[in-house]
Length: 515
Picture (cartoon, rainbow, N blue to C red):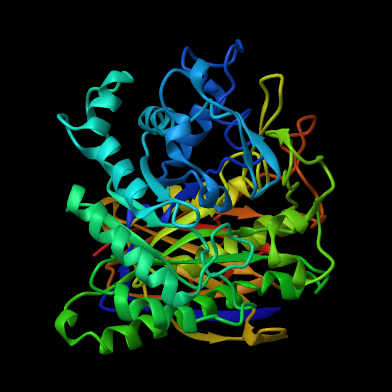
């Protein structure tokens, strides 16, 4: 049996967890909005057309922000198409996903829904085909009280109080050839700088997210960040990056170890931010934080992609579940396995261990599209396997993350030799509890975890939740929704020096503590 020893001391924290670390993302893509959030004239929806079951499930996640309306969609979206009387709104082609956008759901609808489910909106502006003036006008529409054209139009549309949206993304993945309005790093820096200026002229209190490097496969990876931050450092508060982990046949143990890829990805962004700061002596006291505003497992189950050359444009992707120019077709509705859920749990541990730099992280996406929650047309809702580790992270991942000292058996993986057990430990001082998240990536046998915890007078293990099973391919379905769910293990024979983690498992151990 493999053994890992993790030592923690309350004197050595990594950092505090910002509530926005547990956030999500919804885009006008597939059934994420239509049939997900918004399903009007149905008995299971409210008077605004919002699905009641979805509202309940989202509230249970206690999310910080939800990013909207994209994603690739935003780079050819005109927000003005989605306001005013619904009968007057025009249908448009969405070039990002080769669908038809009916524009029956827009910024007012999203802000009303976000208020109902208790989350802050984080709005992306179109810096692809859109103008800097239109971006500033959107801030005016949303945040200015009254007395100007766009603020008065919001009032005329039935929304007297401004939304006071704080977080704004300056476009989406603008370094990618697949993006409508793709541009070079220098071009983006110029446009984003001017948009930032105008948007902050409207509301100086907003926080801005610059588009950083999304993916390691791109030739501009990190060079993009270096170039744009030379201009944008004084104007923005965050830089975004995206990360999707894929089961591409590398084997279960390697896939379980892919948290290390995300960790390396975040470290790279940290490094380029430190370098960028060194070039800004006037702003030596300003730290740009990371906004990981898209992360998840995405196995591309209904996308045919012959090679990475297909990334030259999203419309060259062949979507196997839809034809071109349908309205909100059921696309990218991934079916997640137990193995996928364990990987999502491992990625969550990585995010916790990087909260010194990652202040916002959005699981992509929230509903129906590569998501933890799936709905059908008849009013049923399914919590997929990945819902459960994410929900446990949002529930127990609150407080201060402690820095580990690790002595562990290792395993050889595609990412090098890494610990068999990976953990993150969160001290919830307000409730005098310690939560240890632990991934055992050994697929053949259980592992022993020993914890050395310094800084507490008393430590008492009160709960051990585990997420595991014999069939790593098992999924949840509408017919069998509880096929893969967490279970509680007995803590009777457990001790700090001998905590047993089942094979291929993700665990949450809770301790009552006193300082």
